[in-house]
Image (cartoon, rainbow, N blue to C red):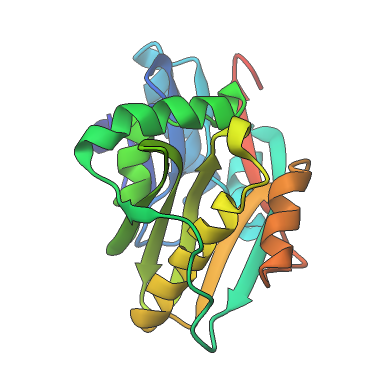
Length: 231
């Protein structure tokens, strides 16, 4: 799909296994696409039966041509940043590197932690892990079972907490804090000086966690846009 309709400034992939929904966003190495390029992409997708397109989280600058091409706002996200100028505290929970056999439990846990629109499937998890040149996939373990997980990416001197999820039945035990500290420590050891994370504007629990751990809300947030049947 991506090679056929994406163009050199667009990245197009399936969205969460939905046959008629595509994830359409800027490519990783070029400036945002023109509205005309987006319109051509949407027309090509329509000819293949795709009736809905969703964007990844975009800055206001990146979102402008998408609005011009007929996308509308689905939801706004807070963008938070934290400088990593010293080694963060060590995690207090048992953590280990995620393994291939953890993926079914990780995805089941993700489905419990997020509402349907934001849930990961196997492809989404793979995309999050390969979104940056280097990444860390960590799981938290309680009583032998996966109780939470995090995906952290690094590109140059910046880090990105790509995903954080904790079993809702185990909230309040410090699992999320341990996963964030592990993420920050890995980035610090890899030479990254800043970590970025985004979360839904209405996700008060996640926002409180990140701000308590030193992340600062940025003036300009991010936007997820929608086009087509559900827009």
